[in-house]
Image (tube, rainbow, N blue to C red):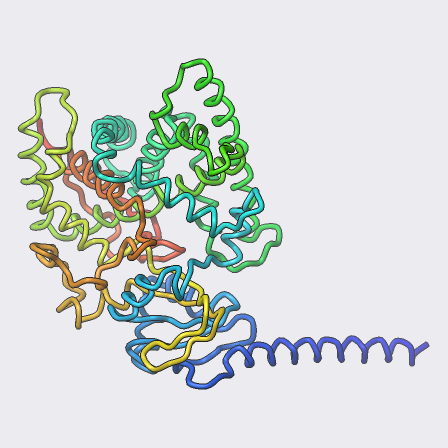
Length: 480
């Protein structure tokens, strides 16, 4: 009997040893090849993922990039992220190469965690569904179409500040900024305006956002597992809204052009087929995340920098108060007002240079190719980082200095300022984000000055930048 148990133990140890050997061999094999970029593979399976993520958790996501730029190359280096061999492209030349070779040499890629949170509900891949979505969005996101939404944005902003800010001595900015941008997204994408209905989605969306780019371990209690449960809850709520909208459209109670939801329900493909309800729910879910998460981070950091830089606040205030004085009582903002907010938008752009809501994004090599003399194998993952240019003195002199004048005239050189990405995959909601940010700034500064309650509050990136305590501030309302 002892021999039997000893044999089992030896078999178990042998299997574990062989498994570890196989994992290690496979990991090393990924990085075997002629003329690969400089860099290192890190540990088997994990690679350098923990270092990559922890630099963001510690508030310095650029450190991972710049440490390796210094050590290996200013243009490109190899690493292993999210269990994938990865080439990180740095600088304007790297951005230009990736953005201009979309669907030629490279294509979009999402980590497994994203695919698990957004399972495609039909036979086409998430990539194909994303392409369809990007073709559909420009009709709603181009400036001409968005002009009619500015008054609605201003109306929602006024209600938001009346409910969440006015009459309070102290507030926490980040949760309120998320509430504002999420309320706008719900109203403009699917005509849901009731604050209680909007609030029902808010907490699950926060869970979903924090788990989307987590380590792909799907066990009870992990960020990915919580995100999947949140995604399922939100889908059920969206399905109820979709079914009611179909009834309202059939009965003439809803308009075919009132929002993106109506358009999706009525749109047909080449074969004359309508989208399935679950497909629409998935697409609306993605839009709601993209439509509010990054903008809420930008709005939060605008509040942070305006508190720290009184001369910049004064410039924004003077510009916005002139616009406010030109309005009749009760008159909402319009397109002409937005065009006058040049300094305010320069300030917002400088905020997004220093604290880009989109830290970077992944691509996948469709075929092997050569960049800057280095070979990139087919199937490798590619990553571009906003910080490789935003905080680089080669492109932005004194990169740590806050200077809105960088965006005067023609602004930064091409491919150096990339808070919305670039090329065919540039964020289709860029103009939408500009409007919601400027409407927020207008309603904020015409009501308050403020001061930070935590002078040295830590910044964390998970996956977007945010103050660790949400940016608590003390409000000082302007006298009427």
